[in-house]
Amino acid sequence: MSEGHVSWKFVLIAVSATVLAGALPNQAIAKDDVPKQIKFVIGTGTGGGFDRYGRLTARYMKKHFPGNPSIIVQNMPGAGGIKSLSWLANVAPRDGSAVATMSSSAVFAPLQGLPGATYDATKFNYLISLDRLSNLLIVWNTTPYRSAKDAFEKEIIIANASGPTAIIPIMYNRLLGTKFKVITGYKGTNQVLLALERGEGEGAFNLSWSSITTKPRLLKDRLIRILMQLTFDPIDDARLSGVPTLSEYIKGGIEKDMLEILLAKQEVGRAIIAPQEYVAGTRQNLSRCFNQGRQRSRFPGRRKKKKTHAQDHRG
Image 1 (tube, rainbow, N blue to C red):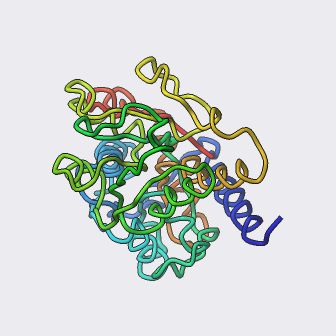
Image 2 (spheres, one colour):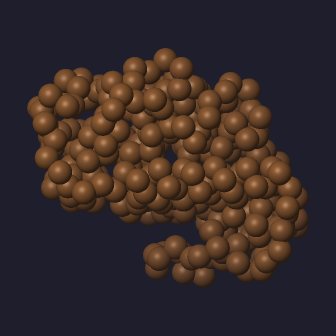
């Protein structure tokens, strides 16, 4: 097995372990142990799935933090989440007053050697993950593509953000024999969907089912067609019945191992991440705050009202 393959596996194990470590016992947290103001950076543009989840988290969970601190939300899109993770690693304070969420592909960007990804993802503090991602291959309704078979026989132009997610459809071409052509530079889900509507692209590759369900018009008005579930296990939703998964195209071997590595970002999901080298006890306090806030608040009900699908996920 190659050194690069081992490195990817190591990062997945390390990240999963640190997210799981956030599942700490419910202990009392003193008011003075939590900063009076927390900066919550969202490493995507406005209106997409990560933005919605982040803002909903900031709005409803802060009420269950000791001292009811103010949570200031700031969007920081750039390079598919690399910009926000670089800020977290190099600029953000280590006193518990800064957290971030971004495309989970940015966690793996250093291993791809992408520009600006100078951080060590295994050293961040992973507090909690709000959702395990399940991505889909979609095309706009005006395109001629009707099934996953078309992805193997015809070139489909994929609109995508710049950064670490851009390599994924290219790797599918190499591992599965698909014929995706990738156009990058779009900042988040809204820009990608606008590009499809304008005809700049024909499909999208890195949109999760939970993001799509926050935009009911896509399904209700049949603006998109879903050609493939980019997971090995089918998504538990009747609306995706009959949509093939990766298991129908690859059974095992090194190709499956490599695809599992590419899918590792879906396991990390919508993680809330804090800087490395925290002062003693700070990570434990923030982890407990997020976990206790989730358990005690009306957050799950609010997510439903806000058309936001969620799976609480800890690693």
